[in-house]
Amino acid sequence: MVFNRVELREKILQLKRQRKAVILTHNYQLGEVQDIADFVGDSLELSQNAAKTDAEVIVFCGVHFMAETASILCPDKIVLLPDINAGCPLSDMVTAQSLRERKRELSEAGVVCYINSSAEVKAESDVCCTSANGVKVVESLDNNQILFVPDQYLGLYISTKTNKKIHLWPGLCPVHVRIQPQDITRLKQDYPQAKVVIHPECKPEVIALADEVLSTSGMCRFAQRTEAKEIIVGTEIGILHRLKKENQGKRFIPASEQAICPTMKLITLESILWALEEMTYKVKVPEEIRLKAKAAVDRMLEVV
Ligand code: 13P
Ligand code: SF4
Image (cartoon, rainbow, N blue to C red):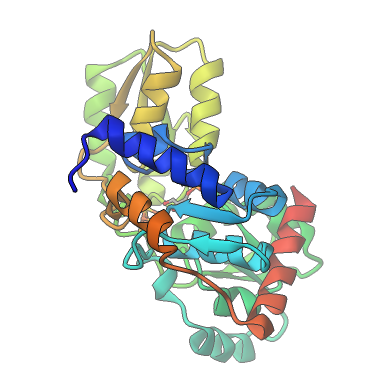
């Protein structure tokens, strides 16, 4: 049976109530997926929401590591990822085995993993962080040396804000590295009054041109409080939907139209309906890994 968009929305909302489900959605999701969510946010807010929800089922509209984080925090709930192929290539750039090997070489270092990492990697880390709290998390450790995985650019950005020695890992986000410094300089010529907000997964030459370096929800908060009427947005373009919706009188200019995360876009209204009908795809972290990974996530949630 084929439904139109309105019918599809209604079917989802009806089934969501029946299943006692909550829909948590990342800022990069398709506009119509954001519009059906109970909550839209960045990685930090999504984990905080997962930790406190009393729903029985969490439908996670984001990528695999985000659903895993919800499963780490809520082992008694059913966590559904509507498309099992929605992974994060950055998170795949470090494995638990490769991390264990590097830890042996850097036995003095505290290990901080970006939340964009697998549960196994979190289980090997002292604490995890998001783009919203990396500096605070690094500062919270007693170690003077930090091994930071897997995003080299977030790690490098943090290293400019702390006196600690940060050992970087050669991971990167293939979406954010598409944003080039010349994209920003060209747009600044076209929009001389515009403020520039940049995600810390971008390259340092791009970050150097930013007025503010922020997580995705940090960008949404900035957009509301700034007097600026034009904002150049250096992150995945899915966020523009929320920015425009919440700030009708302001203009948002994507730093690069190329900054599209294909796996984020795998989640659709159709796949959400399917997920609720079939209760697929369940994301569940094995208990032994979960307990160790939870220690790293809990430690982050204590810091923020
Ligand atoms: P935020 O936590 O800032 O939303 O970032 C998540 C992400 O995957 C960035 O690419
Ligand atoms: Fe992963 Fe980059 Fe996509 Fe974020 S934008 S989910 S870091 S690939």
